Length: 279
Image (cartoon, rainbow, N blue to C red; front, top):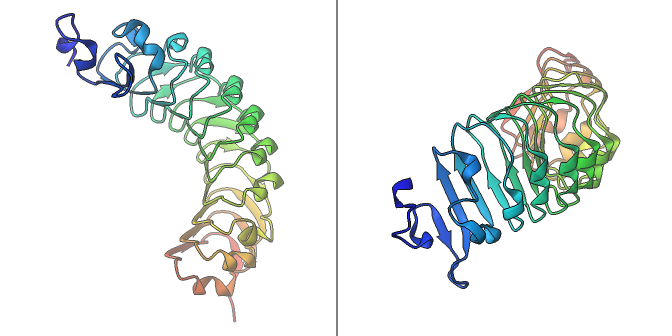
């Protein structure tokens, strides 16, 4: 692919570079495969100032992201690579960033507190890495955030109450070591459709109004935690519910009898709790 990146062709004709149709000599999108990621700003020099979308396939290690050249960047996809090291702090210079996806890599260190300064961020994917520490409370500053994927890491501590200030619709901090209970503020996120908190050490009881608080909920995954109390009967009001997976907890009482009336419900698993059978 890189054979086309030479002075014999205008850079707008280089493979995997896409220029604007309206503005001359402006690169707005690029896709790089099997190259040294940290040469990104080299091929287009000053034109990288206008790059809006970047994706990459590589096995390079993370270094210093060339964010000073990419202040208009909106989408950054680096998933399914073998990036190592930490997420560079200067990524927060990309103030127009809407989507940041580094899922399925080998990143280490803590989730950057500074990510909370990316005020336009809508989707944050950090799952399937080797990240440690806590979920930063600063993520609560991301008022436009709708997707938070941080599962399959080595995170610990509680889910920040501050996340209730966002507009999260899908949250997945599963398969970590999170403790405490589900913050009460999360029940204010009425557009929530997917909650996947399985395989942690979460405890406490669920809000009795969970089915009313989350009218759009489709997937509720709380398996392998330490939840107690009843399975809320209000789940029968969640008409869009497709699957509820609550095994290996300490739920007590009866399974809500009206769950079976939900037309979209395809899967229920509440095994290995302390639930009672209806007589």
